[in-house]
Each structure stands twice: as C-alpha cells, then as structure tokens.
Length: 531
Figure 1 (cartoon, rainbow, N blue to C red):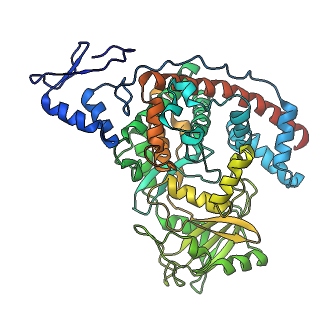
Figure 2: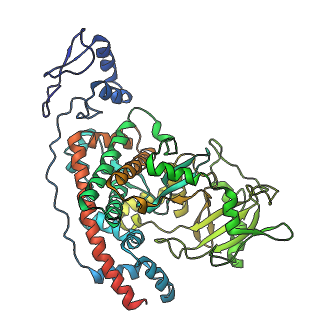
Figure 3: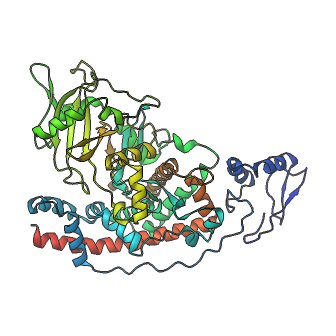
C-alpha cells in the first residue's frame, strides 16, 4: 500500500492477485477489478465503491490520487473573558418588548443552571461564532484541502441546519410511516447556513453534559471527538447512494440506552395525550382542560376569529404538502375545529412567544380515543442567523421564504423524512405561526442517565448519525456540489478529519468556559434585578 505523502499513485495489474492490497509501493488488482476501477473513475457515484475495494480509509473517496493534505496551524481561539455589562445589555435588548414581571419568570428559568442559560441564548452563540473569533468557517484552512480548486464557493458548506442543535433538541417522535424515530425536533431557528454552526453548538452541549454528569475533561474531549469522527464517517457512507433521504434512527437501528428509550416511547398511545389535555362533557363533547397542569387558558375572541378565518383549504390547507406518500389533503370534516386554547409558559429560548392548541375532529366520532387530534400553533420569530447575515445574504433569504413560519416548515420537511403531514403555517394578525401535530410520542432522551464514558460515546455517535443524515438530506447544492460531496472533498482524508475533529473539540472545551462565565454574570444580574 502507498505510504502517506506520495503523489505518484500508479496501478500495477496482476492477474494472479487476490484482490487484497499488498504492502508494496504499487497496489495490485486482478483484471476484473481493474476494469471496474477504470469504469468507476468516470463516475462520481462509484467512488465509494472504489474506496471500499481498496480498503484505504486514508484516501479521499472522491479523488483516489490526492496526496496527503498539509493541515496548517489554526489561529488561537479567543481568551475567555468576563463581559457582564455586555451580557446584561444583550439579554435586555433581545427581550426589550417584555414586561418586568414577565422577564422575572423567564430570566429566573434561564438562570436556574448553565445548561438552561445556554439553551436560551442562541443569539449570543451565533454572534460569538460568526464574528467573535470562535468559529473557523474556512474548511480549506482547517483541512488543508483547497476547496476553491474544486469549483466550490464560500457557501458550498451551507446546507439546511436546525440552527440550535443542542442535546435537548433531539428526541423521539412518530413519523407518518408509523415508526418511532430519534431525531432533531426543533426547527424554530432553522436556516441554510454553514453546517458547523450545528456541530459547534452540539459539541459545547455534549461537553457540558459530560462534565455535569460527573465525568472528566478527558472523557468530555473523547466524547466530542467521537461525535465529530462519526459525523464525517456517516457523511462519507452516503457517497454514491441516496440512503440519507429516508434513513432514520428507529428501534431497529438504535442500540443500548437509546434503543431502550425508543421502546419505552413506543408504548404510549394517542389517548394518553387526550386524557391529559382534554375531557368529555355530559353531552359527549370534547374540550380542552384549563388548569395549571395543562397550562392552557381560553383563547381570546380576536385570536379565535383569526384562527377560524385561516382554517380552510385556501388558508392553512394550502400550506400542507399535497404530493407525497401518505400526505393528507384538506377535508372540512376532518379538520373541523372542536376547541381552541392558549398555551402558557412553554419553551426556553422561545419562552413567551404566542402559542395555541387547536383540537380538530379527525373523524365524526369524537369519543374514539384515536380520532381527535391536537395541533400546536406556535409563533415563529426571526432566527438568530438574521442578525449575522450580510445585506446580500439577507436579500437572498427574503427571496426564499414568504415568512418565518414558511422557513421553519420548509426546514422540517428537508431535515426529516416522513414528515408530520399536519405541518403547515398560518398568519394571525400579522404574525406567522407554524402548525404541527402535538405528537403523543414526543419525548426527550434523559441525558442524565449517561454516567459512564462508554455510555456517552455510544449515545453521541448515534446523535452524530442523526445530525449528519439531516445535513446530507437538507442539501441545497446539487451534484457535483451536494453537501455530502463537499464534506467528502474537505474531510474525506483521515488527517483532515482528525484536524477538524480536534478543532471542534477545542471549540467545545473553550467556549463552554465562556458560557460558564456568561452564566455567572447573568445569574448575578437576575439575582440583583429580578428576584
């Protein structure tokens, strides 16, 4: 097999060769494989097959004859600083439209622990990564591979991302194929942008949870590096095939703690949710329950009128997917509104946005536990990415999406397979709202149960598969610049992959310290002003 760093990769054909690469300066193939290799060199879709036959993980799958990349020394990450005045100002600016009494509730929730704080300040994370020196977006610099020479541009590493990829935004849900799957489940901040924003945000979350669960910094570094390596490995596995389109982590694919979690979620029934949020009166009519447990209250007349006005085949119905497997077209009987309510005090980063529940008939038999359906109607605000876009990129975004809810709906359809058929959007009094089914099977994985390094590594590798799959599925570029092809060009070589994983780990470790410093500032601010 060729040694690293050699660029003269000629093929010596040996009819007697058994097909296994041998330890010489030339790699021999039998005549049958030589024909296949020659044919495959003209076909991008066969490149993964070449790599498999060669059993050469060290070679770039899309370019068999690429020499080792020269991975440069990257700039140092910013020093962790105390920036209390700036944190206080940013938190107040972001929440300028809320009353002091409301902020007291919201801020006390976010100040309860560093993880809750981190989840609620995505806008600070975006600012730090894009202009604060934490994010190194130039993969050519990181990997030592000149992507421009491949005809790729600044935005070639952009794909659909969730924009807020922390461990609490993964969970179980049931898709329209009927499978309980583990995947991304929050699309409020979703955007078309550099994939590393998801990777970095998730890496910081992983590092923090590992330490919080009592493991060491060495364990945390290994966890993040395992995630980064599995991410690229998964992306490379999608070269030459379309498996990412439909692949989901189900009970058949999950293992260990995650598998048991999905099995438990599968035992839930739709009737459990209806029993929690609704009741049936003496006349057989089903209504929402308004109490502290459901956090529901009657919807105002103004909002109710707006919802009913939008509830038609030409309104909400026009935003549903019409073409596809098991999609649901509009039916006045099926989508008939049975009851409406306002949902209070939910979310973290989205705490305080308008949110409503709509109970629809599903069928004429409202007493049947599996018929009535609860739809979640949630206001969708501008994502954090908006604040960091250049004027030209912002104009491009404006041409893509009618409103922010349309953006979030588009993201959900691109990042998941067999997407909830009730996903659509409406506009109420000038604001955009995403409409989705409130799934009885939605559940968050209990990360606190992971108490050993082995458990964490198993879990984050499955998270890596989910993340890479959604990014590959969400590609905006087309061949030869599909997202998976771009990543294969940049990180397909083992040395490039290692350098990138090392940088992701360094960002996670260092930025977590900045989050802890910011959290301490914010906690003291809340104790002083909002207790």
